[in-house]
Length: 228
Figure 1 (cartoon, rainbow, N blue to C red):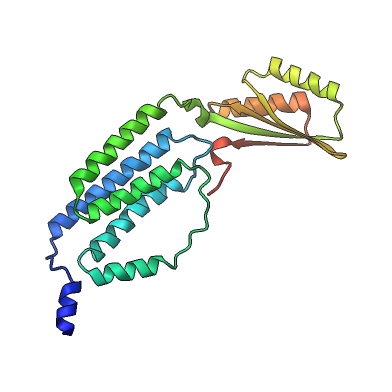
Figure 2 (figure 1 turned 30 degrees about the vertical axis):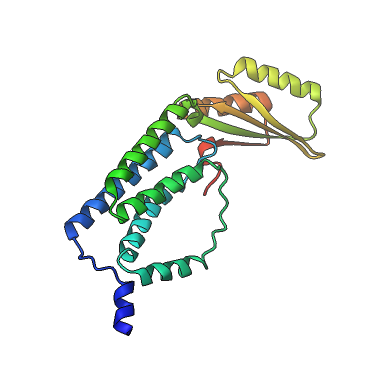
């Protein structure tokens, strides 16, 4: 009786090393393709720096899991029980990232289940669709920097207006005011500017120091605002 139950829970399938290696290599290549697509076309300010590595790790991990459990119904049921206790508490800040996450999972599922051709066709087709939908995204956002200026004391609005006017006239780069915070001790200004190199960064720093004479100045790469 026990032998009958065990035989019903186990799928008889011989391990084919060559087929496994081909599917494994295909999963890696396709996951790298998804990663490069995410890196190139996903909006810069919403992009997570760790997502690129996560996409590759997710595809390979799902591939391994499906390869192991597909030969046994008992392992499949055990996997369901194991996953039921897993809790993911990291929020997805940009819903569109879910599309890339599911693409990574789909690659692992498809190649792990031995369905390489349908997986390749669907994933590449979807990446092409996303390419045409996102190709108009401003690539200059990759050069976006945020400038944080702190001035001692509460600056008079008229003096501040003169500073901004002088900044727009003397600074070659297009600076946009994003935020202005007043307090009894200081005034904090947040601006954004697009820079294309270290030379421009040094020149911008000197110009801001000459115009605002800040007590504190920070220039942050817009791509690295969120270290996750």
